Amino acid sequence: MSKGNPFLALRVSPDTLARLRVVSEQCGRAVSDTAREALVRGLQAEDGNTAVVSALLDDRRRLAAQPASRTRKPTRHQRAAAATTELRQLLDEYSDWLGSLPDFAEGTATAAKLEAAIEALEAALEALEELDLPRGYGRD
Image (tube, rainbow, N blue to C red; front, side, top):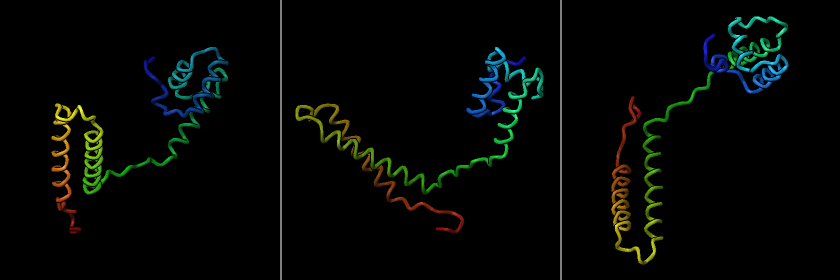
């Protein structure tokens, strides 16, 4: 028998897995052994173990009937807007950090790094906001 998780091949839902556990406990076997045996047998019932096979088949049919979910990739403009928003948030966080430094920390290496980071983020944000990105395919 092949090793591995037979549930990955079947894409078994949690409720079917629960039913499979119950049937496996009644038979006195491990869940993976019961499922693996059902796979090896080609999902044909033997030994009166029809509950396992029917649960697996029902689950496979239900999952096969579901449409595949598709997520759309964000457009370049959406990604550029997200980058601008992220830069603004970083700039705000570093500005707040610099503003909350105690008086004795002024002039330290940390304060100098924070000031340099704020200046670089401001320059990057300004450059990104000035970009006039093409939309493509005649939508400029």
